[in-house]
Length: 108
Image (cartoon, rainbow, N blue to C red):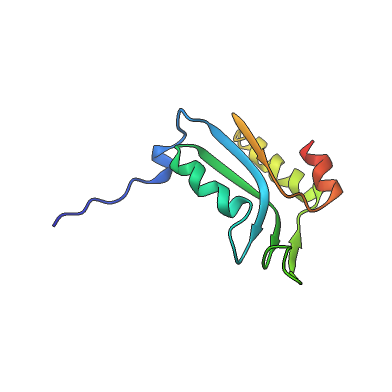
């Protein structure tokens, strides 16, 4: 049985479906935020670039959680990196959990 290599994602993208900047949370355990949004959007043919607003051990609905919260300056540095490389072009913006006021101000 002959198997061909799977297509390289970057060769299949960008698609005519669009480019999505997804700014949402990420958890190590569980499926919320970017962890639950990116794959389905890719299956629909979208080119998705995720920025994780937070990275937590688990959903905040549990009694405790640990992790990091991205602030506005850190988000701005990511945006600047995309811009300097001419990558800051998106047809869609998807937002979710925002963990800090400065991060929200930068998103705005």
